[in-house]
Length: 50
Length: 206
Image 1 (cartoon, chains in turn green, yellow):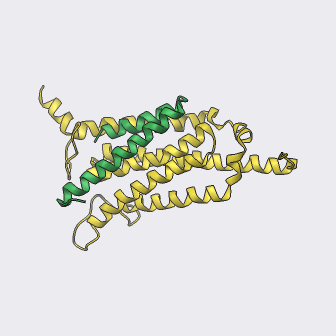
Image 2: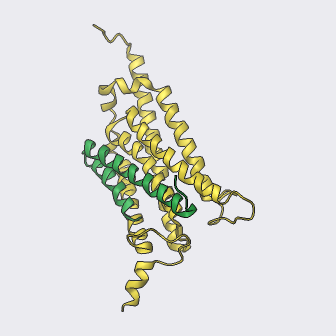
């Protein structure tokens, strides 16, 4: 789960250092991984399939 | 061909409103920075380790600030608010999941309440406020996004306080990464964590 923070750090740091496009692409990547992690958490905890 | 026939007072009003909206971005970013820093302080000094859903909500809150960070660095854009809104929607789902876990009377709760409301409920409220705020700004100041030159005049990113908030926000993300790594390593965190697994394993070797 710690790697999610790194995935968020990449778009934020690249935005601060002026790489706007890199920032946007990596933020989408981060959001997708966040949603997948949440989906796994829900399905694992409830032992169901969505 | 369209010509700009706006009077000087109108331009000054636009510049003033741009400054107000940019200032609100800095305040929002500072708010997330303070809340995240407070969460780290509570974790370290009161030994309240975050559960997996709490961590996801913490990450989500910081992701909401991403849109405000872009606005602060590059100036106001509607799509920056959209990033923030999408992050707020995802975080609201995560917070709602934890609220529903504890909504049945007698099913317990996680962590101590603040002002009578648990942290996951606060996160849900913050997400809803963030979504409403982003929509409100886009509705109220739609003209800001068409006046690129006007926006570029507002150089708030060079202010030392703003720099402190921006780099503080990045530092908080790095600290959260370190603490989460010490707590659960690279795997998913346990549902009810009570120790820093990796740190304790490392110390026990000596």
